[in-house]
Structure formats: structure tokens, C-alpha cells
Image 1 (tube, helix red, strand yellow):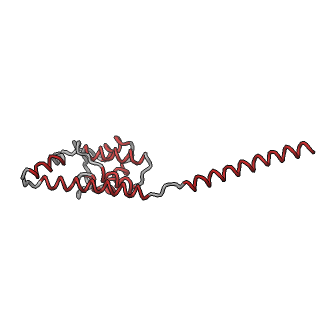
Image 2 (cartoon, one colour):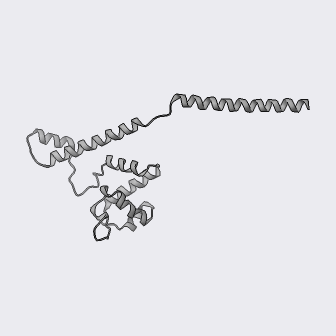
Length: 164
């Protein structure tokens, strides 16, 4: 089924201009019809699913680089009708059995690349500095001092009011 950018925009709740921008920004994940040379964009159901996923990631507050990283980690195999779905285990078994077809090494290599991307994403997440315990203690101490000053001011006002 072929969809126009207006159809995608309506399904995703975004403007047609946004869909056009996504077609160029996320071209590596969309079908060739998303950026044709003749200018008539025709997208498929897989493109619609990817756009819906982009909408959900944006609602989570992800930036464009984060969305690209997430799209690289995600497979939409249940929607991919252009390539047969071959499970990595099956591909490895066919290699072990001595079948030297071309599909198995490609699938295994794609699978390994996907695993490598996931490890890179985890490594980037791990390297993101977490708030330190020291920062928490400093914030607590600052709040405590502010509360103490406030209580002392109230006490001083009470004493001044009582003696005046």
C-alpha cells in the first residue's frame, strides 16, 4: 500500500512539512519512495510505522541524534516485506551445516552490526555522568540552611513584636 506524506501526517498527528523533513532527516531508515528523484513521495506501511515510532520518541523528549541512535537499534522486521526474515540462529546453523549461500553471512553480519550498535549505545549511556552523592548532600545542606535562616527570621520577628 502506498501512502502520501499527507496520509502519514494525518496518521501521526503532525504536519505534512514535518513528514517531508523526516523523509530527508531519517532517509536511511525509510524506503526509496520517501525521497524519489521525481519528487513524488510515496511511502509504505513500514515508513508509516517508523514515523509513528519517531513521534513516540519525540514525545519522550528525545533529540534527533538520540532518535537516530534508537532507529539504528530497532528492527522493523515484522513490516519488512522486501527481505525475508531469517533468524540469526538459523543462519548460523546453515553456515555450520556447510551451506555456503550468500544470505546467511549477510544476515549474521547485519545481526552482529546491530549488536555492536547496541553495545555502543549502552557504552554512551554508561559514560553519561550521573549526579554524585556530593551534589545531593550540598543541595540538602543548602535547603537546610535556608530553612534554618527562615525559622530564625520568624523567631526574631516574634521576639521583636513581643518587645515592641
